[in-house]
Length: 188
Image (cartoon, rainbow, N blue to C red; front, side, top):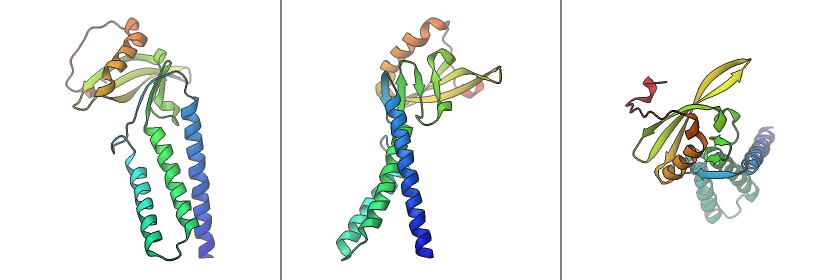
């Protein structure tokens, strides 16, 4: 009974991780006219937990294969498959895409995708390794306009290209009176 439960749980995670990876990959491949994209994970641009999990799986699988005479290869491959699918999906979800039509902060979350036409204002906050852009945008919910915001950390290596794209998409809609704020939360 316990073995059936463990195998069923493993099969469940194999199916779910595969579906998550396929859906995420499909959402990323559906994006058209991508102008910029960059990695935004916290471990050299990669997502921390899935990368560490995959690294430990590879390490422990290698040690087990070397030191045990007859390891269970199906079990190792199952865990590696789960880890690889988790890594692929979390990597693509953490990647930022800037398209001709707007900003995609997470390919699997429509609430983190905004079109250039929705943006009503934006602010910049400088940091050492990146510039945080805070976009204020409108959403119509039940016939009422609501203001929302999305924060996008743009690495310094992409700043000039990103600002050029912003000037093409948003510059003509705003009156450019520049204000310096020390704390962006005080203005939102």
